[in-house]
Length: 362
Ligand code: AMP
Image (cartoon, rainbow, N blue to C red; front, side):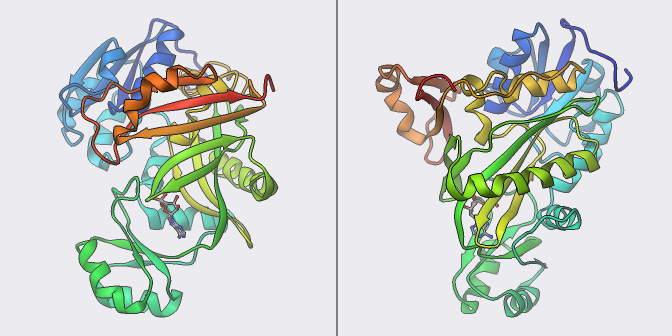
């Protein structure tokens, strides 16, 4: 399949990863007449319930990923932590979007910050840390308060330790178990926001309104559009950097970038080469959701409009036992409830989300 070629409805889309992102991608794909095949290691992943087929396999099983790749017409991923070897096994058999380069960069917090800084983005002061000695050196240079994060495999605040004072270096190093890490200066931010864009195979690019995001304990709590105040002021600068990144990577699909709005302007935090939790509001809050546009992009279709459908849109995650409020949420006519079908509501686990459309049509 050439890059410009359109994948016809009825074709098979492979999705690596079986969580809620895969579930919502599969639902958007089904609306356009595609059949999704999910690949994930779990027994009954949320995405498999709404997809045409499911292969249970480990993310490091090269033979299984190669077979999976050969069974679909295009592949994408909703899970980022696949090693280079298995990814190659997959990409050897089928076009894979977003491109490998984006995934390679986003998998490592140091590489990611260097890449974005190289394209003119501002980042927090940072240093690579390999052991206690290099952590002490980094703290000398960067100062405290700072935050130590593992370079790889961190998500939702996992693998992160805050360091209020240089005396805490040893404890922080123990907490990350000496894994290769990054030390970042704590950014004194007024707000957090993200840039969500989608780029098609022909380079057509759309962006959604940038949501203002609130995190708690490293987990996204809520996203709201349109953003106001400092986020509104700083979003255009961040959007330019995002567009540059997409161009540089010859990107295809949805790309999400998280920023801090600070006194010094927008500070890039991290990027996700996939659909993103801060874009869940787009299902009802914009004319075309991030999930639909991602499917359109990887299938070589034109992209849909990202215009808002309401004057104000608020998305709130349902974390752990907050999901028990489902009935009360349904009683509010402004609310749209999404449950991910996860059987066990563990603390910190994203069980669903609710999007409220307010203030009439946009
Ligand atoms: P991350 O996993 O990098 O997205 O971090 C999760 C959350 O922790 C962010 O959304 C921020 O709320 C906070 N955080 C991470 N890095 C920093 C930083 N360098 N300065 C201040 N807050 C941070």
